[in-house]
Amino acid sequence: MASTMALKLACGVVLCLVVGAPLAEGAISCGQVISALAPCIPYVRNNGAGGVPAPCCNGIRSLNAAAQSTPERQSACNCVKALAASISGINYDLTNKLPGMCGAHSPFKISPSTNCKRF
Image (tube, rainbow, N blue to C red):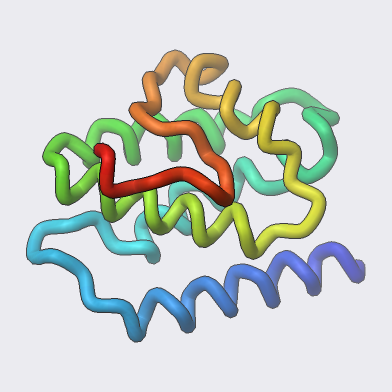
């Protein structure tokens, strides 16, 4: 119950930060990123317990397909980075394996130090 409340709080904080952030025209919104990746959060917080949920892989693949241009990849990278930083107990090694496990390629590694301007 407490972890569910913490997850909702973390998502709310990220959403509030995102609403105030200007986005490049045509860029992927952080709301889209959060919606796509929300099903992955329990998996990466619980060290892979229960296996990768199908909705998680669907979200990763749809996000990957949507982020085709440099501004879209940079926007998605910044949103993923902010989302991951707001989640306590995230397993970054497992998080970075998810795209491959879902049959998708991620152009960036998820880490607090990721430089999203490189994409």
